Image (cartoon, rainbow, N blue to C red; front, side, top):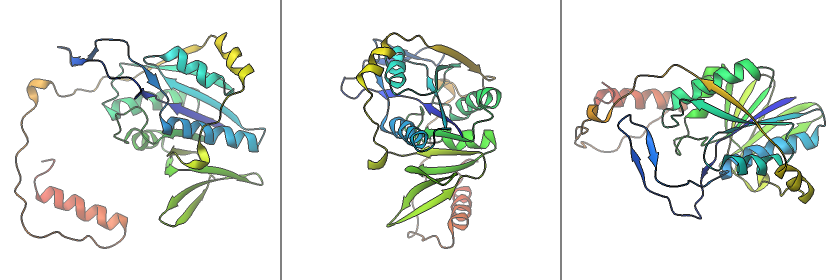
Length: 262
């Protein structure tokens, strides 16, 4: 099996954030060198892939790391864990706050160069400022089923199963079609420590970079933003009944009645 792992990275919480501002072109200007590390969800996705390779020697693990601050150090830390391939992924333009744009860019590359990978693993908040929507949109762009909040994987003979917890129980999914799984952190997928000899080898490595782009979507400018209308809260709370699909439909209807999105 071929597994593709997408890593995003986050700001290193051990250091204070430096000042940022918006330019006249609505891009983010950073006044200082940013520090970036793998998020706990990045680490979980990578560890799940490595454990699956440990359990089946024919498994191939390929990694794409989104380009950004501290990129070379992050690449070296991932390379020390010996994935089968590792590339830096540069988005043009890079607008991580636009989840649909980012998903379209990544999906284009995956379809071109990684279409034979049965499983795509991403941290559940890949590169999108904790919004959590890139994984959902990417799965849709790729035409794949998404398995959200995955915590571990396991081989049973030659069949791969993914697991997540729901309440006090576990849900298991057999991977029998191309799939995208968004991974959350868990005690079972804490990232391993690399061997020292691999760390030293990674320091001497050079890394390839791949660029993917998509047409820029027309977006809002700051001058187009208006204060949202205040909607008074009326009546008592309403409990939603039925299954998840029925609850989602009822919630969507309620939003329309309140004028949201109109």
